[in-house]
Length: 623
Image (cartoon, rainbow, N blue to C red; front, side, top):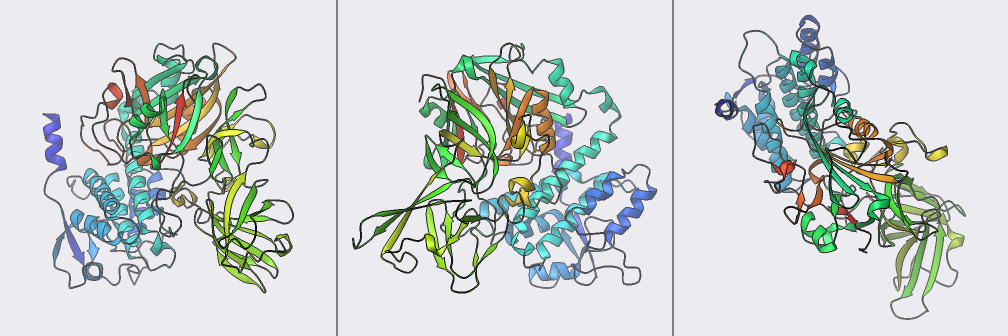
């Protein structure tokens, strides 16, 4: 009966929008007082004892200040200015329009230039789901928390879609996605504070302590292969609401685990099938990749990996950005060691193979080491363009492709590729006998050599940020520092570099850490797949929340990998004799009691977006 009532509630006829005859939606304010919907909400929060003080800061997100809150000066979420309806529809506005379908269709239509149709439609559906779930029956004149959150969702959506800012107008898709996730997350953070019964629920850290999840000998872990342990944390918490988190612990000594990082785009299969084909006992999704960035240009394509990717000793992608990386290297005794460290371009040697298409000269090589002989690497974390001074050379590079070659006779600006870099070096480092800057007959191949102590790395994949590291010296850190890992400016992913929520979003996450085995001196690799976007079973965690969770599991260092819809964890199920996905699908926002029982031993019901890079964990006898 409860499920039926809830379905009736969720799927009632869409609300309507009252059209308010105001001026342009980007500048609409009260001419006499300079009031905005945000200032009106602020007054309501101050005099409403049932409204949280924290609510104002949430409403301010995605705006510069209180005056940057365009739209009708009313607390009705479904009010919109007539000029907005006219401009978005291309004609005159009618007196009444359907609220949610109107804005959902605007999102699907207006994001299309930046992203493909399927993704634009998905973002529209997410908006619709959140707006519907926040919709409340009228309580007379009382202004509610959900009403103000829905107000911000609608007003900021129109503001983002209507912007004429030359930079922000190319980032509408990213901002809409972040806005919807942010409002969704905060509705439950505030809801937790409102619930009197919440005091009866334990915190996430208390659940870890109660079930002794620091130790793989806890009865809550299942050893599904020698040295491989799995547990699921599921239930209601006082700090994050419903959680559903899968933990994978790998005892490095007892499992003799070998890690394999791959570009999964080339496999044309899902992660369970890939794990089976490779003989892996477990697998997780990998690092960041290009997807929603508005300025993806050839030779870059959507789903290209971002940052370092080493597979079986071959450097597929260089460490353009100095970011936290999970890596496996060969020790002096010949054994494999998995570690976490920040790896960047300083000390990396770019090895250029110079060839003549017409065989006018024998193949030659040119080696340039970043940080030596005034050789520099400029990426998007520092600038969108680089100025070459007289007699400077600049190679624009993406992956192993030299996109353009430039030599400056005077001060010259060249753009920095999105997921690549510009290699700047003095002209006198060029070989004298070959005019590689101007001769179209010259083709250039490019490989990379990582510096010590990474020159013996067999497999590695970058993510970031580093949550914490108890290592001594320059590699140690006790908290996240995103700018120090080049999550800034326009460096991808810009959802991290330009986070307008300041890590307040509860989202699906993937994190890894290194912990000491409490029962021996050996180390364990700890992987956590945090589910989210599910009202009943999992809201998700912030980055800081994921960091705290890994610390509570006994990790002495930990880092973030790509989360969101791409997050995936697969383990071998000896009872079913198959590899299965243990995490919930997190592509769509779910607001009703669902039938996804993947965490309870069944495969995930809903198909999710495929992973584009993967980390496979093989037993010691597999290579």
